[in-house]
Image (cartoon, rainbow, N blue to C red; front, side, top):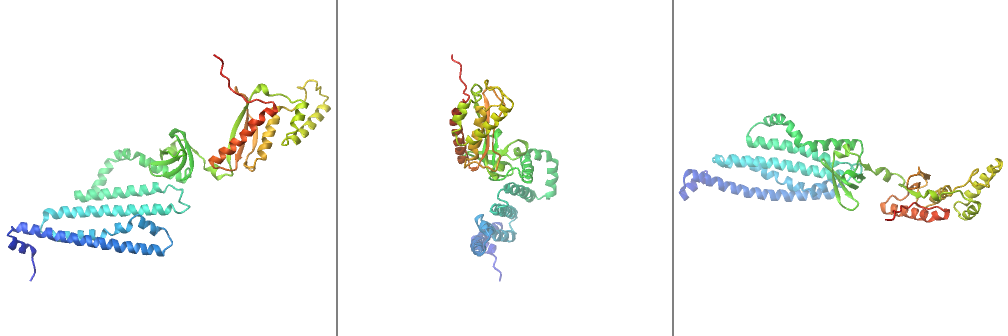
Length: 409
């Protein structure tokens, strides 16, 4: 004999037939919901133990990241959701007023669950690729975001189709008519996606690069490149956010070449007062010969000049006649000799001391060299030590640095 719960309720509680059927559906639904919760708890426990066990047996980090991104917990929702989609229509077959909304709700839950699972898998893939050296400096975030936009697009279409009961093609036709508005709404996203591809193909910026972009007051290391923005951690630890497409449309400085080279460039002038520049007399040259770094140069240069002046029978009663040694020229030689023996200067890269065109602020003597240590703090210390020494040595050559003096009131 088949037991009918609605008949039992009808006979015992003296309810109407429709109320008995409705109460029967509620009781069965609550009972089913209780068992579905038990199934979810059991599935979550089993999947977690299984993933942890497999993770402990493998060397790859991918399964560890699956656990970190809660893939087992997400998969545990599928058995109860799929059972509910199958069983609720049967339980509520006599109560159409609530059957359709519940079935619709379960379909929506399944859609969101699938989207959530895809998002977590993509997050796991992103984290895994960042552990691989070849991908660590690539804008993985941008590509993951593009895939997620496509997934959400398809998901939203399916959700609208479920709610309205219409085919997805109807929504796609509507979107085609609204394509101009969609392009306007997603303008930055589209530009960012195209820029991400250009940045990657042309290898313009990598995560970890030091870039300077004055238009955005950015000067620091790139810590993230995603679909819409590039995050730069400045040296004062502030974060500057730059639209990704600006890396293609605007100019910026990438210091990667310096980091990959054998040194960091020192390029700074010392301004020499023009009135202090002069020819050196023999007495001053004799005094400067005591400077060990240039004593051999002075001897060789003096002998060469004396021989040439003698052969040309030059009248040296006037110092201007013939060839002579200037104090600024000798200082340049001294600065070059000093840099050539400096332990913190890379001798394999360009090393020179040159005179630039005179200006209203004096004659620039530019130091052009490369510090062997590229770390910012050490680089600044090396450069400061070099110029401390050179500035202190200038008076020995009877030279003066240019100093701007304000007119007296």
